[in-house]
Image 1 (cartoon, rainbow, N blue to C red):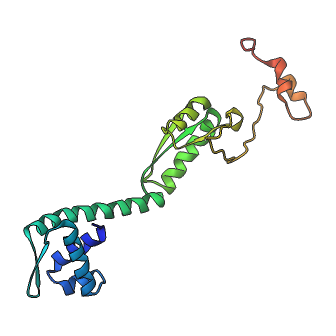
Image 2 (image 1 turned 120 degrees about the vertical axis):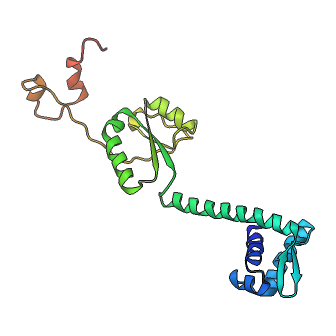
Image 3 (image 1 turned 90 degrees about the horizontal axis):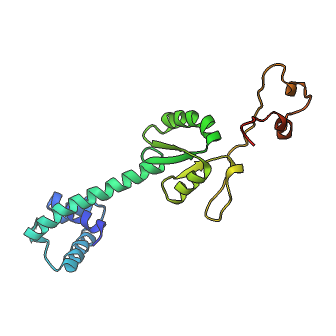
Length: 198
């Protein structure tokens, strides 16, 4: 039994005529008759009584027609849903954001999604990289945006560099680092680290 056969049966039920049903589903009348006969053979019961030119459903045919309407409707709803998902018009996406990317990208991401895909539900998780990677592995997240330096490469992860982000050091006016005539390095910062941290 196929959805196509069920659609043929519904066309026959709606028109009450093999010739009209065949036109409706773009088949020849013999092809439609073969489809209905194959369905009857598979089920082992007559579905249609041929009364002259009129086609009337049998009691079992009426039951099958009711169920077929539901099945065909649900199948079409699934097709519509799939098209919506492919076009980004429905569904949800769960994204994990590491601390750096999360601070810089969360608001632009949500604004862009609201503008371009308003019917897509966006869930954002913020945590350290290890927890986010575990959530990805557990399928609680669909994707991550994290600082690549914090990520341990693994064969089950697909990494793609999206953007290299530049950072900047800020310090007060008159700080000794402001006297440097070149870029500040981590080694330059080491003498000024907090006494509470190693």
